[in-house]
Amino acid sequence: MEAKDSKLRPRPPLTALPELDETDSKYKELILTLPKDEERVKHRKYQGFWYSERHLPGILAMQEVFKPRPNDVILASFPKSGATWLKALTFTTMHRDKYAFSDHPLLELNPHDCVPFIENHYAYRDEQYLETLPSPRVLATHSAYSTLPESIMTSTCPIVYICREPKDVLVSYWHMITKLEYLKEPPSFAQTFESFCEGRVHGGPVWEHVLEYYTKSLCNPEKILILKYKQMLECPIDGVMRLANFIGCPFSEDELKNGLVEKIIEFCSFDKLKDLDVNKNEIGNLKNSYFFRKGTVGDWKNCMTPVMANKLDKITEEKLRGFSFTF
Image (cartoon, rainbow, N blue to C red; front, top):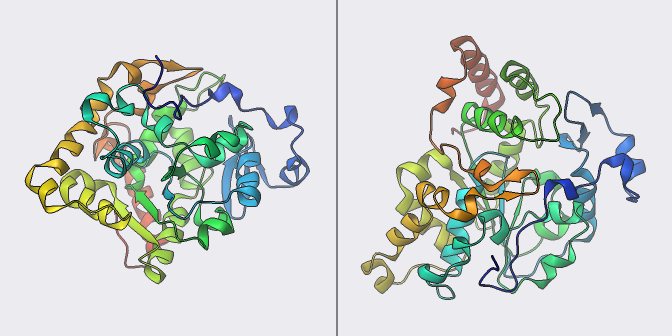
């Protein structure tokens, strides 16, 4: 189905991402020198973080080439930390004067289509698409702060970072990768648990990923807003109002009286989005439905033994020691 906004379109499928040995990327020589982990998904360690080989050419190109517009909004997150929901809320909030709920792009496009991942489009060699999007753009990244382009760090565009309790991140991450058809032997939960604890997953280690954005937000709170997934679930009205204020489109008194915040939250709710036909469709070898599993807090209890949970909690406690940060 054609999207209502002619500038928006479905993202390319994962199959469009070339394997490193299939690309003529100018970054290939550098990537081949990086530390490597080949446990089922090929990862390389770059600037202290592990990234899949398929995405690294895009991250490197983004670092070198991407130029944000002054009114861009950047959404950042570790994978499986609430990006899908944050994209829907931010896109709807920012463009509430442009789209009616009855004729909205989210009715026909997945949130990841409305808010594209910057590095993915560079990896697809589809970066020109980003330039066709009208301003103000809402763009996303899973990159750590230290691997963001210098152009984003020094720009005026705000960065909104959402984070989630690591045990829930791990469970959501595992459920996602077991559905990826290009993995001939999906890892067991125990295998994924060990890789996660060692930081050897895409974007990992999660603790360093979160702390980079958190510490930068302390130095520059007008540049980076930290949102916590659990708090957003518990107090979505407060969260959306903070978001709107931070990105420069606060709600008016009339909008508040008319319940617009509540309407946006309902429109972007997990159950509402999950039930849309578009989010039951398949894009290449990655179904939109894979982004809508449970969206809850505490689901780790259904996958993780007490011993596993205790180990991960201890690692988290150690990694966060000395920082006034909790999930």
